Image (cartoon, rainbow, N blue to C red; front, side, top):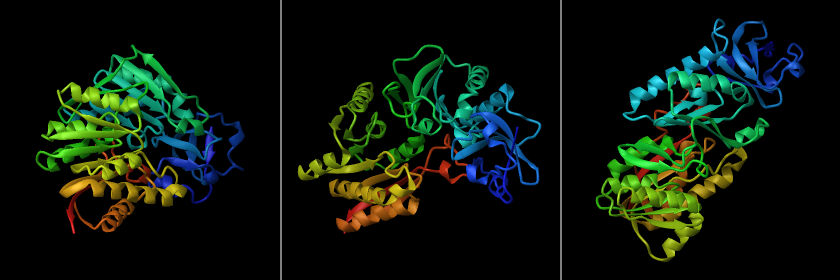
Length: 393
């Protein structure tokens, strides 16, 4: 079947983007009602010029996503093996151990698909009806290219609601592991699966955690806020930190953090509760730290959330700055794509002036290279991190 665009609506696709919005489609020329969700379509310009093959969901705002721009290469089992093989070669070149994001959606020209690798166990997420319909082909490609012991689908993302897909945890093949094992920057960790966030681990922060280890003050007292399984805290302890505390609202996450500390023989303080409330209590108690990392969930999931999100980032940074000793290290992160890097920096600076601290930005970080950014799709570059020296002034 053919999906024809309106006049001029092919410009973004020709520039490299992979999404087609429903208002860009020439509905008079395209029998949209005849498309079933996930159907493959030839996407063409208003003049009939071939733009690519994509899968269609006529009920979604993003009504089609490009898979291939090669007219001779209609997506099939061999196509998925080729794409996953290409993604694997990049990660194998970048990482000494097989622990990384193997497939990062649009950035690997596999829109709607994420796969993380934990050695011989893969955990994937499918976000779209188009990829859901191609699950068998993806599984066959994974067997051919990677040959892992197990492939688990942790399909619980909110994106599935938009595509009218059920949420589920299922085993494609192999056995469901009780926990996931990985090595990051030379440090071994365990990650929860069933009750864990995302696919179990936040590989996107791996490069930032390597930088954190380099910049930590000597013999530091460390506070890891929104810690999940304690990756930042354990990384600091492995780099010589004197002590570390984790703050998280999830008892399960803190249990994982304690287990990660224990496997290396480290002591770890855990503080359960809302991050803002716990930090307020620490300020009241007169606690001080030499290094604090703020790695909260996205405060701005939609553009209309931005004003509240900016206020939340400023307040969280303000609380952290009140807990930092002179010449301490603050790492402030945001995974909200809608919040620009400049806005996060403004929140840090606004917080600093409010509590009479002076901030020097030592480094700026983003997502690790197993999360490559697509130059035509800004949404693929979402993670921001500022490494700041904080002094009294």
